[in-house]
Image (cartoon, rainbow, N blue to C red; front, side, top):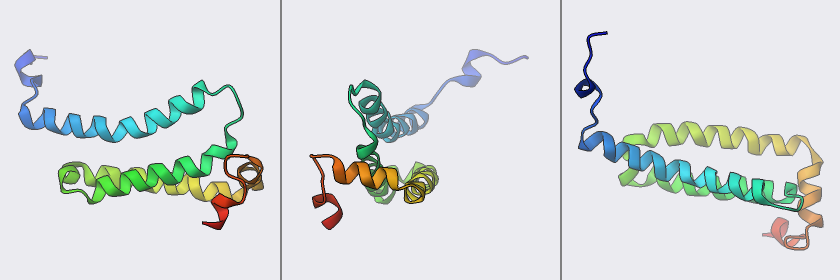
Length: 110
């Protein structure tokens, strides 16, 4: 109760961490916006999007610049992997990927 606004003031280091967090969270936000704004089915994009996001976050987790929040990124990667594995539980994602003229079998053959 007896706290002043100065008790909640962010220092330079806090702002640096927030900027890193913002950069990390910008990746899934962009992916989500792509799905939300699409006017066509997007199930075929699920697997490539999860793989791309996982690759980007893995690079960030290994980058020294992101060291202060690397543990949080790694926990996020665990969640991405959990959902990626769930795509294996249903043939829908694979079928949609193969039927999408943008991907077809070329994606699977890589």
